[in-house]
Image (cartoon, rainbow, N blue to C red):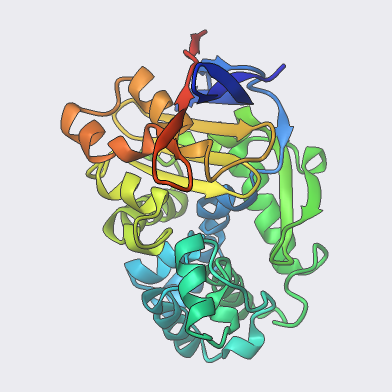
Length: 336
């Protein structure tokens, strides 16, 4: 059963609540902490992109094209479609000999509301590179070419690249393939439903790779390092994922997913964390819930908390600019 994670107050009253579920899993595969139902089945959505990106390495695409860290980071991203992101999309496509016409994801306004307003005000002509999922799609196309698969209809679940990715996810998250629920994401490719525990278990493997097969160890280390070396690729200017990774100095990677999902891999403590907000809110709910988890687990030092303070609480303001309420985390993790 989901539990209350956030309260939204206006004046003296709690006006709204957000419920959710959290699983914190160690590198040993054991559930360490939880809130609500750590085995709730959900679609991790875009938070699963770092795990999906493992196939870029396992397919031979990394060896074939020698992708740079910014390119790998973009393949794991839900980016804002800023100039820097679109340039890397084009760089990847040029490297693999394809164009934006090969991307099945469609043109889209930025998922960042402020940048979206600028795009509209400036009458920006949108292209598939603007899609927040265009990096992931580039990775899928590169893997198709490395494996000799057709690039048409690479988004369909029966396409061999999607079967490869499904197997990678199943193996990495230690779940039977036939127990993974398959849906369709907003960008047209399959999404993989599974318990939060299994998602967190998968992310925990990014934190300690010495016991993995060499090829998989290299893939995990490369993805973790790329996301830390280029956090600006993961979201964008002032984005939560970008700021979280940038201000934690190599401790972790964090990735948002649509409809209220967030996943982290935290070194030192060597845990994976998977969070699902029941009502799907992620603009308001995800940052303070993630911050509360990290503080509860004593992962952040004082300077890191200070640098990320704006994500710990949201102040509600009215049209006059006056503060009238607050969004506040109200939970404590349960230790197993």
